[in-house]
Length: 437
Figure 1 (cartoon, rainbow, N blue to C red):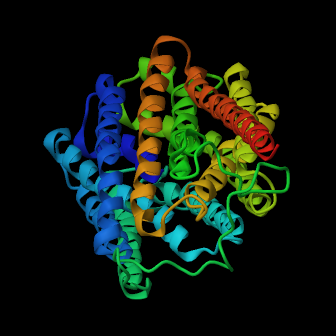
Figure 2 (cartoon, helix red, strand yellow):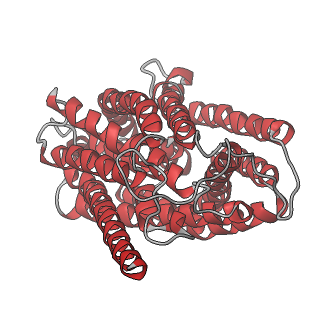
Figure 3 (tube, rainbow, N blue to C red):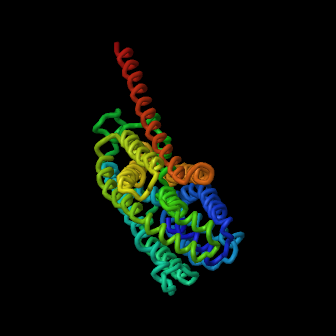
């Protein structure tokens, strides 16, 4: 989230990319990032089943730290920034995959929903830290009287965050337990025997989806991950909208009137100040929702919860598309719906689905986590490209449209999966009755 939001400052203050190429350059770097991640999430998943979670997790944060230190010392887009962005993608894909795999290893069968809620809470806390601390560091560290971002402040900010990543790498290496079993990792014991799959009911969160084995890779679990991956897409869409088209069109009209980079940086700062409250509201609501949704995962059908979260998030995003002035008070209500539906609820629920021991063989959890993350990367690629086209060719608020469509699609898929299972169960029941007769 921080890298995507702060990249414009690097392009202007350090590399000196012409303003007419800012959008294309930033989009290309993000596209290549996700393209590599698409492959590596599966590779890291396979590697973790053989080399262990600790090695992959610690290596991921190490690569992130190295890339952040190197990113601010590149003087060209190609190959400089691209190379560092790809190193960052290697690390980020490793940590994303291991989050799912370690979660599956560490959580018991009956407590998986609650623990996924805790992960959602910590994810929201991290996003709040990025919004209210890290994104403000460049202005705070700048020596400019007006607080405008300069090359020195950007470098110092990246050093701070790179150091945090390196510390995480060291902590994980020494504190994450490495236990051996036949596939290289010993999974955590479940809270009692793992139950046989049960029919869907309002009180059962362990209902099989369509097939008995491999259902963790079902689209109902993986599609939400694609639309909600790390919350970067939503945050970037908000930042792009406010940077390029706030109500008085501060940034866009200002850029047309002036070629001074300092003017651009001043406009960016004002746009960020307008976007931060909305992002903050979304993350705070997401933090609260994570606790509620995590507990609900252990009591209700997780497929049904995915559907409800998709519907809530979809309504919020489509209302954002319809909003003519994104700084009106009603926008905070739509942002709250986004926070509930997109930021955490779908991630929390789909994470619990994809790691459920009812469906996933413990010896291949890393591989399953990789496939889960692959679908996430595909979703990000699609949303990023479509969002950019809508922003340039249609209207700025169109950047929210693919997010809303993705959420409603996930809700529809959840309904189809639920109905398909009910039909399948009905046929089995009739067949059993006929055989007994």
